[in-house]
Length: 356
Image (cartoon, rainbow, N blue to C red; front, side):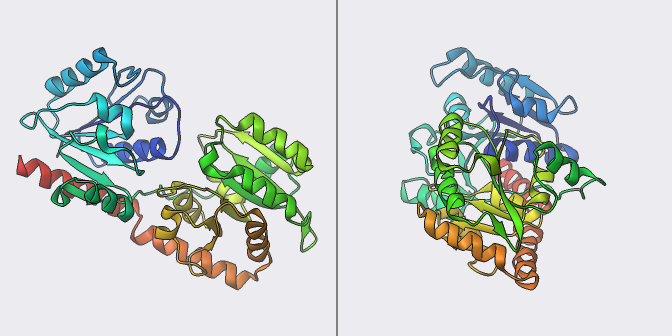
């Protein structure tokens, strides 16, 4: 058994936060002692629930000296072998003496490394991120590639998908274009709205609806833009959803229209749910998706091209769509399975702890 402390500074939830919850929960399920640290009332704390030991630390910002001291005290008190931090705020506030524990910083993006260099080892969730870390001066012997995993979804309960459509006023016969994520400029939702405008209102005599699950700083502006484009009657905004499974299972096609995406947890989630995927050619999507084999890749910030490719995917025959879905599921079962990723982390923890 290896004792780990996991620290994240986010109040809200997103891709990194969902992975944090999954990994901490999986380690706990395996019987390894874990303690989760996040701000009071954070969404990750709520999602982890009462079964996992947690300590709230506010982490107001990088100059929050009390939180930095509190984290040091937690390390001294619980004496974990590994302290793993997620994203910038938690990493900057965590300073661990090598004799006390191994500080592993997990990165899911191409961040300024000034606030990460003091860690003892680094995990990048894509090969591209790992290459970036080494090129920017971090020792290659301490940089490790471990991808993300997603939980295997449970089958929808009888009537659940019908109830979802009824709740969001989507006809049972409608085709659904689904997108999930933070409503932020990097995620390309404005491009998706433009693309949806260019699509026909029906495909194979079935009405076409756009379902967007997420929230963020552009929520108001995007709704206004949908009004201007005349697509509000066929667009549904769900806000942030803790349980995305029924949404993925309802999708006729899943679209990631991001302009910048280092990995793309949503791609893994869509694969796991058997949704055919089209994604823009971000660094993360190009590393994950083999074009026309496990999904379709299209150009970033090109709404007309995106619309054309969405229509192509919607019009494909069942055999072609099934082939894309099966390859995506195969990728999940092999490279991005829960067992494979958790084993990789445990192997890394054992190695680093043994080198102290």
